[in-house]
Structure formats: C-alpha cells, structure tokens
View 1 (spheres, one colour):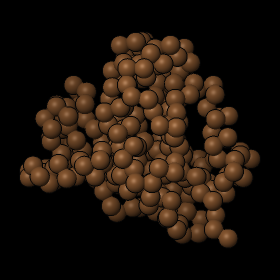
View 2 (cartoon, one colour):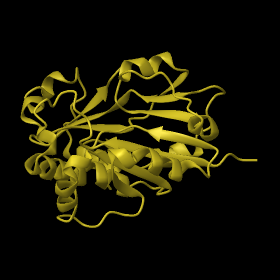
View 3 (cartoon, one colour):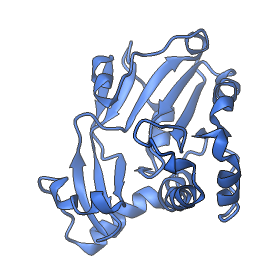
View 4 (cartoon, rainbow, N blue to C red):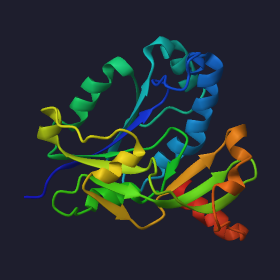
Amino acid sequence: MKMKRKILVPIAFNNWALTDVNDNRLTKEWIDHRMGIFMKYTCRSLKAQTNQDFTTILQYDQRSEEHVMNALKQHDPLPENIKFVPKNAYNKTLEREIQDYDEVYFARIDSDDMYHRGYFEFLKNHQPAEGTEALINQYGYFYDEYSDKVATAKIKSPPFYTLIYNVAEYLDGKRHPVKGHLSVHSLNHELLEPRNYVQVIHSNNMSTSFENRYIDGLIEDENEKNQILSNFWG
C-alpha cells in the first residue's frame, strides 16, 4: 500500500531572537517590510507550485500578533494551505496537519527565498533510498533584486533541505539531530542535482556582496534570466 505523504513547509517569520537582541523583528516597520518581501517572493513561489497539496506554517512571535495581522490585511488573502500561527500554537497546528498521514517531508525555506515551482511535485513523488533522512539542495540561483541580476549558485550546506520522518515516530518524539545547516550532512541524505532554489539578496549589506557570492555563472541573457525566474514565481 502506498504511504500517505504530507508536504509541510515550516517558516520562521519573526519568532527567532539569536541575532536580534533589540527585538526589531517585533516592530511594525520590520514586520511590514518583511511581509512585503515574503509576499513578493516566497508566497508567490508557493502559490506557483504545480502541486498545491502542501501546508505552509509561518511562525510569528505572539507579542507581535497585532502588527502581523495588520500587515496581512495589506495584501491579498492567503490560500488555505498557507497559515500564519503564533509560536505557542505551532506544535498543535503541526500535529493536526500531519496526524492522518504516514510520512511527512519538512521542506525548509526562509521567508524571503523561493523554490522551483515543480519542487513540491517532486517531493510528492520522490522515492527515497531506504533510511534516507534528508534531501539537500546544493544547486540553485542567487537573485539580487537591486541590480535585477541572476547567477548560478552552489552552496555546500544550504538552508534549502527537506527532512523526512515517519509520522508516528515524529509524533512520538523522534527528531533528527540538526544543529545548523552543516549538520544536515551528518544525516543519511541524498544530494539533489536540479537547481531547485533561489536565494534572494535584498538587504543593503548583502547586495554589495552579490558579485562575491558566486564564482561564475552570471546569467547575461535577459530572456534566459526571465525564464529562470518564471520557473520560481510563475
């Protein structure tokens, strides 16, 4: 019997604090700006997926709920499979989403990047080798929104990976020992060859380093660049 598989996309919106000692992520200005970036890139990529049988759960810090809800009102309503939930409700929401399935694929992505529109279709039909715990996307693209440039990317330990679990084991407490992106390589993993991601460069400090983020692979042809981007945001 074929296993019932759930594609779950967990995204940390502003529920982290490691590099934000001043809690800027809780402010209206930060949230409005980040929401705009999410809608422009990540949400657009999610809506463009050829297989919409997935659920995205974006966690936000409950202290900023009013700002998050107000920011959402400034944009088109989200489809039912893209949800914003406070951090303290995340676990219960997740459990409800996966409890009727046999296995779950957690497709990691940040709230400002994109996956190829066929990636979730691939995940739905993927046949992993026995014991596979993770899929790692090393190949993708960089996109600099300031210069509107695209370049090929290869990141050895990227933030674009998918963790695989048996649902019963996950609900029973099993977790793969992941401490940072590099640690995913210590899991039983498969390296995926297609260019499945776009890492968007949008902040001032990252934009100046765009040329330093790739060795070669700048896409010079305008039509080719536009075709690449259309494969991610539809």
